[in-house]
Length: 297
View 1 (cartoon, rainbow, N blue to C red):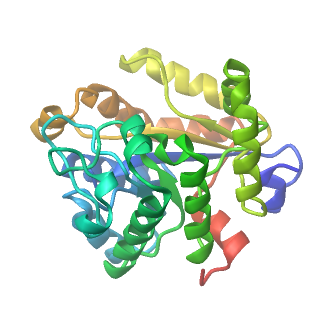
View 2 (view 1 turned 90 degrees about the vertical axis):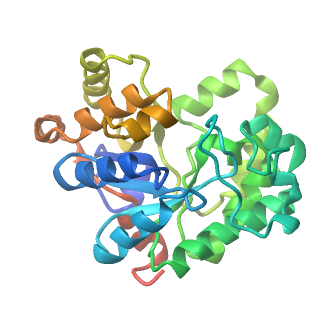
């Protein structure tokens, strides 16, 4: 049974979550995300609580409780000059801190240095900080896929999600993404099985698309449209990274052009018309949360 059917949709239904990652990273990302959620096809996003512009997006969430925003569990700080630290007290999570006093730049370094206990503490601290700032998060997911890099991290992620009554972004082991990963490395099979047990009973995405190859606007738009045309029945999430073409974002991220193009594509009202023409239903994580955890969850 697909997640769409578990949500009450007829067999064969094609549902799509267009998900903006990295919300709260900076002002240009916040503005782009809010705009694309308002007039385009972005249905959900997730917020980086440790980042400097988190308070701004939390304030916008308080002003507009209908915004479908979750928590982008952040355990890395990858940019060269624009960096952040854990929410947890530094002395409680030394394994999450690099030699410069910030979170590690790479997923590999987090796995190498951090303990599962430190990771669980930081996941919980980020959820609690979001709640303290008045957010009503719809889900949790993972920045740079760090949670998926360790079975112990993934188990902690599922525990905290259940504790707070939040769906966690988890993709089906039968998805094209998971199958391609397992095919490339058969040694991953027992790890996937351990993760499957940890996620038992939770809502699971049928498919996950993590990005597009083309950097230029035209080809990137065509990739997006091809994805819409080829969706399989069930719930697919496509991840986008949005940003406005401003000096702030250009100074932070070498990927600023891709982020700006993702914004242009997903904020275009014509793209919403195209999605509807394909018979695809746009949904967000709030609908999943209410179905599995209730409106008060």
